[in-house]
Image (tube, rainbow over all chains, first blue to last red):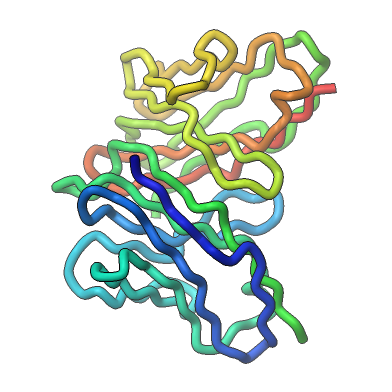
Amino acid sequence: AQSVTQPDIHITVSEGASLELRCNYSYGATPYLFWYVQSPGQGLQLLLKYFSGDTLVQGIKGFEAEFKRSQSSFNLRKPSVHWSDAAEYFCAVGPPRYSGGGADGLTFGKGTHLIIQP
Amino acid sequence: GAVVSQHPSRVICKSGTSVKIECRSLDFQATTMFWYRQFPKKSLMLMATSNEGSKATYEQGVEKDKFLINHASLTLSTLTVTSAHPEDSSFYICSASRMGTEAFFGQGTRLTVV
């Protein structure tokens, strides 16, 4: 069965510092990979996704992620965080499909809570 | 991007009553809709997958008689929590996808059973 591991439950970063959130997955093949952000009491906003091609993916709000097949990882990065980035971040995987992964539900990691220090 | 609307955003109901949550795709036709449940400080767990016009497929451990899902049209799916109890209190999130594309998430519904 597929699984997603986000090893860091909480991360505290100073405003303006760089950020890296870790995500490892276990899957029989290369899955589709997603990063979502959730503010308290809110739904999920897609930051970026990887389906194929260039392993460095650019997303919204200045985020990027790199897919590393050899490490089964899809870590999220941002060069300089802002106080508004404080939120819960979820990595998710979906089964590989020829057209985009939309026909199956996603498997989520447990999330990483990002705290921004002034 | 595509918009998915979930209603209500918050609901409080008495134990033993039923509550219905709606998930609508506002600007696209959703061939598939998904329902997730999120416990406090926990990840999202897929509850069921529904395709328009057919019965929902429930994940292992999810009671289909307690969580009734109807996907009557290409823009609307409903989740009804029947005979709700305090342990059903949770944050429920739907997502909807067009054929062969990524899924888009609603804003979630906070259910509190008292």
